[in-house]
Length: 125
Image (tube, rainbow, N blue to C red; front, top):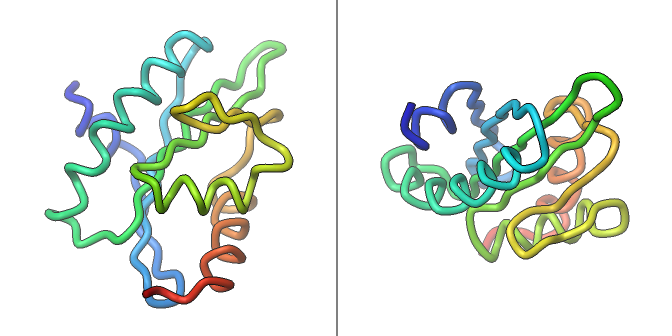
C-alpha cells in the first residue's frame, strides 16, 4: 500500500466549528514501525489536503497488544502541532514528529473531544 492508501484506510472527517478536520487511524505492531509510520504520515498528510478540502489533518498510530498500549498523535503541519500541544502537551511526549501518549486513546472518545475544546477556543482566522 502507498502511504496515502494507509492514511485513508480508517479515515474520518469532522466539522469542528468552521474547520474541516480529518483523522486517519492506523495500527502498528511495535514502536519502530509506529515511528516510521508517523514520519511517513507527516509527509503524506499535507499532500492530501487540497484534494479533500480539509483544513487540518491528523493521524493516530496505535499499538495495542500484550502489555503495550500507546498512541502516536501526528500533526500534518505547524498549526496542527499547536493544537496537539494545547490538547495533549501535559500528558504526551513530543519527539519532533509526533506526540506519544500512554495508554492508547480512542479517536471518538478522547481525541476528537480534546481537539474540539482547543479549536473552539481559537476561532479560525
